[in-house]
Length: 541
Image (cartoon, rainbow, N blue to C red; front, side, top):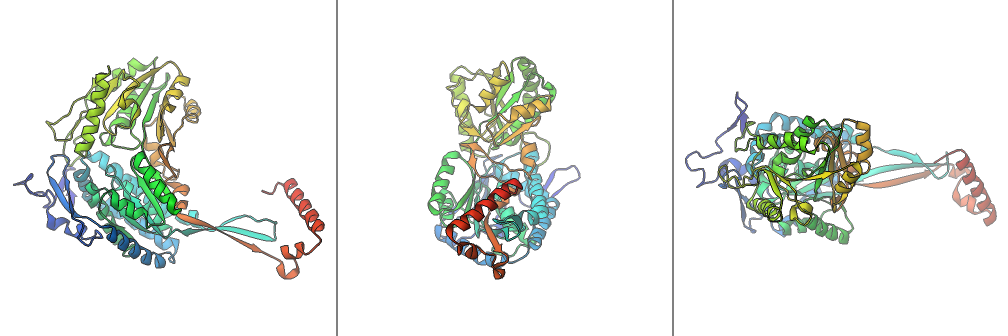
């Protein structure tokens, strides 16, 4: 699709129409036809026209799926899964490791596509490539360990051999959002596949091409057909998918996540839900301020703030608050905004008019209640229709919408606190608990403070990447920020069923529970009572 030129910029091989960029599709239909053909559709549900966020021009036309198409996709996936489950973990892991190599080799293609579908900067797009490489490498190398037979203590030592086995659930559904469409389409799909499942993905309509590209490259890596299918559409297609699969993974708003959880609960299927966040960053009195300021810029404005773990609340110890703001605000004002498909800009566009409207409403509401703008606060229509300047707000009252609700844009508010205890109270004063950040030169102190924060991941001296990128560790939210975990052992075990197999030895020699219970009742009870007491003295678990 594209290649890198000698100066690191993108070469869009024939995708753009230079003569009429706003009057025709940015992605020529003939070029994207092989991807579009992968959508499971009967062509009865209409089409969705995505747009290029940088300009608002039409990007591509995607055929939509009907509920009947979803049913057909799940049935195809279920048939393919039966034979896939009988392959070895090593065979399945080899597909992931080949996919890892292909994503890195062909990153120019997917970086272009990610930028054109989301409007993000290239460095934010590369975060997705890096994340997928991390996840595929981890599960490609550790899946056999996570999925292997695990011996546990049996009821009676020596006589009882107990083991735990992981079995695939069957077909996993993934409802992926538009903000990180490669990372979040594959976050559960990759461990699900290596665990022996099939996957049906429903991406956001704006970012369907990214999911289709991933499906194409996975097949190139050796994944058999129908094991990863893509359906296209909105909420009704997500609901249809939830009604058919054996586990549903959803990333999105808390309000929608509750609906998904309720529907899944009716069917008694498992869920992995990563939902909203209002993530805090605390700068302690002993923080190295220049490092904290630089880290906060990335934590607040990566992907224009459209990131589930993005920081929206700066909590500053009053001893360093002004020093921090003197360093932080100029860095924010220096961020380069632009539309380039290269590494020349720091921050891209918001993805849609809806996101722009939300950001504008949150900022205007705060200003109307007395907040003060330290940086930004303006719609940058001079760059593109959905651009908004990175914004820092001070003196935001607790009644302001942006003080409590997730903005999901390039807006951060400032709060000052007198000590660590007040900082922890402020950090935990939210219905959400997804991610948090603490900056201190005393890392032991940082760990102690982190243990008091009500969040699924706490980064010390980093904004968000350290925890999210540690893919051997679980990632998920407390409180209204979600249910279940992705990454690590927890992520892959959620996509399997645990089966216990207990084998009793010595039955032919009379060493069985039946023989025991054939004894007079009081004798059997005395024998077992003695056995239990001995096992405790021997500290047998």
